[in-house]
Image (cartoon, rainbow, N blue to C red):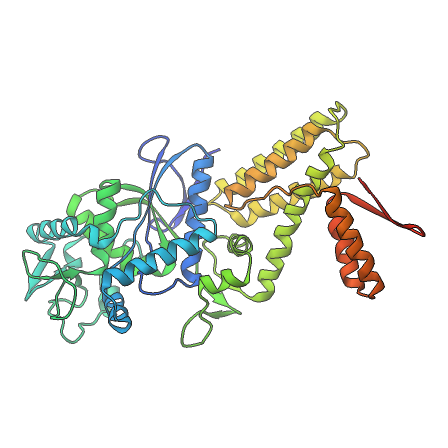
Length: 466
């Protein structure tokens, strides 16, 4: 079955067909690195990493590019306030970003290009736009003319006049039309800058992604992705300047993830509900955070709360517990023929159902529901008096594979040694004497989960492996 995805450009689901069979070029807009990322930044990192993982699971070779904006107004301001050079501050927050998303299970990109490392390409790109009449320089600044590009507004689905009504010329800007946007900004005396034919300065925000996408993925890329807030003006402007330069489609499929709300309110610094990703990682299992982010379809808004995160924790634990219980039971399983084929067919059907949900615009929410069904069937199977090693292996492999598509992992639990069991039993006995029944019950449940059966007798507690 083929993959379909919702294309923001056409506002409908389309069958995904990459330009080169078996190979996918994918560009994701990365962070502006002037601070630690918040959970709104973490969502696209997780979402599009999962898209990449499923494409690879489906047999595609994916070139996955995620850029870093390492010079702009915010970075320059933050560097001044911190008493650092711009490259020093940017590099510090790039490393912080990689650390944070790495903890969330995000795979390393094929390449992480930086604006400062792509400057020659950006300058050449702008020069060509000027030569073609799509851009103009004035007193060291360079502006792009959206009115010169016939398709302007096609991504955000707005007419040029609608866009014009909301545009303004800011104080100090020298553009001739409020819609015109900056490709190059003239340097101030105390700012980092690069030499260019029209004067010393640095790039505007939008031109960088067009230049980097073209440099590393070609004139036309398969998938361009980012947060919903980037649709306009950032992605709209990327299309205009890229297609004005090449005369070819810039990206064939546009994907955008929804917003994050905190306790049903939009996240913002002014509301005081701004949550940094690294603070969340310090307080919660990163796997649970990722699982939570994928529990809602990527295009829908997602509401974050402590209660919902706790629910996600319990749900993920349920899946992992079933996996480990299968492993404990395998120790006493045999190579049975009875009902084996029937169970193997059922497991394979559930894998196909998972794939069907993911093929439908990467619907991780429904795919997770299939994982719950798989877990339920595994628990039903474990109630059998006799079990087959082959069926248990199939359950475990499938659970692990499908969790892997979602970027989630299961660590194999080591079997408790006899002396470790004896030590826990002694601790439990002391806890009972101290009337600490909560701890005593916790130890019993820990041992039960590892298939250690306790029997309390007048002569003391005995145990055996189940």
